[in-house]
Length: 579
Image 1 (cartoon, rainbow, N blue to C red):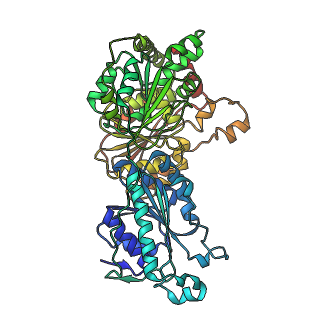
Image 2 (image 1 turned 90 degrees about the vertical axis):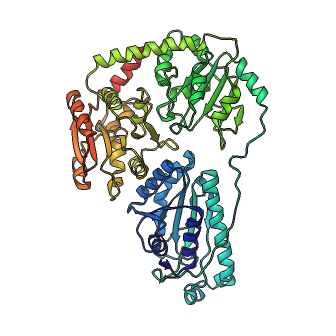
Image 3 (image 1 turned 90 degrees about the horizontal axis):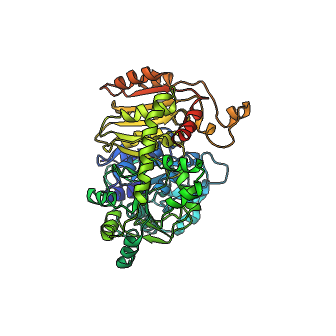
């Protein structure tokens, strides 16, 4: 075994090993050499090299999202670590335990005009669970310290070691216990490449408790009474992991005549009696002459939510205007007041909560039945609409989603991609992921690749052109599995801006909002070793999808070209058609 000769590097390695942090994503650099040496020379760790720091952080986050345990990402000093920030923010709002480790320059090198130095301490503090700022070892490069940073020698090496161990222990406790990203910043003085075969330190066993999972005392009898007496209940499920809700709970909720249960593609919940396309229910109401009456019919007495963030803007707008009498959010960690009417945060597991509520009481309403008729109507009309429209984003998503092989892991890019996906039913066997914490287009490909590393099934990423090209450095690594697949919907720009209010046919709009382009993924595919398939019409898409999922020695990109100026008309026409 080989170690860096710097105590702080050894300490971090020992703590990671003792807590089971096995996966280490490293962006190359010099200042982080002590960490690179220590991790790569220890067979306990699985180390991955990703050059682009933004890609590296999303890669690590995707892996942590998939395996549900902390994954570390390590970088050099200076601006390198600032490129971690988009993934840190996503991890913060998605409850993913990303462990950011940044090598830093000594304090006496900062703000004096030295290269690759910035103020790294606490730089991520607004979007992490804990900032661990380690102290510089004074037993290493002592002559240099005495020359430039003499005040550091006021602390003994033993005091530095005690401080560093406590800080690392706190950071890992938050990552494991509260599922927050954390930041560990470590200053190193040169020389950076010294190695020893035997460590110079032994770590203590520091146990730190966190507050996550601390349940509040609930009056379950009172909650159950409200539940049973509510004739109009709405359950709305956001981002949710596959298979976490038990089958008996799903059946109980599906059989409740007083409950309308809205799911999203990202909720990974499926039942024939659930409502999987929220916008297809609400959009026709918005266009109806009986808008007020219908929205009042849909307005719940009791709203129960669980899971992560909601995609549908329409359901958010509806519930903010037609507020329920009570809104309960079920989560062991936090409750967002998304609709400005939160009345109770119930710190419980959703399975536990719904079992305690039990089956509905004897008083039945026609709440669910009324909306089931509306659901049947839009499902029939959607089929009719698909027979009438030309090749477009809408048609392509219908065909693509229908043909994803059972059991695949599916990653969705944000913007248009995830919103189109909400309109079509996914097979229940598919595991769906999407970065909905901040809902950015950055890092979606990197996240999918990181998540694929330990998946026992193939992965397919559905993405748009801007998301794909923006994160194209994600393909720059040697960890792509041959069964990794990318479906790229290339509509030559940010098509969602043609749907949003303010769309206009001007050069300024096309340049600064839609960002129209003529790029193709063909040359990127060749450069990074992907097979590339193109589809420009319905027939080519059908043929391409058959080839796309066949076994191969290389990953594949299916690039689907759709008409830039037609897609928005067809999507908006769908809502008119079902109305």
